[in-house]
Structures are given as structure tokens and as C-alpha cells.
Amino acid sequence: MSTEQRDQQQTPAPQPTPDPRREFAKKGALTVVGALVSGAARAVVSHLLMDGE
Image (cartoon, rainbow, N blue to C red; front, side, top):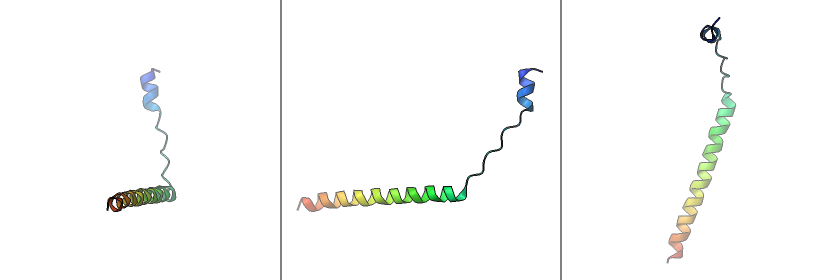
């Protein structure tokens, strides 16, 4: 049997289904990090603007 024939006979391993709870946790964590960065950026800009007065 040639390598080509052997490769064609092998079936790909089934892909594990993503855990919905894990995906939800990832999205939640990204949202929290985004909110913190946004809040920090807003605070810095506010501080810079108020400092100039």
C-alpha cells in the first residue's frame, strides 16, 4: 500500500465541540478587560484635560 492510499484511508480525528460555558467565560473576561481599559483611558484623558486648567 502506498503512502497516498494509506493517507486517504485515515479519517480525520473528530474535532472536540467547544464548551459553551468556556466560550461565555472568555467573552465575559474580554468584556471586563475592555471595560477596564476603556475606563482607565477615560480617566487618563479626563485627568490630562483637567490638569491643563
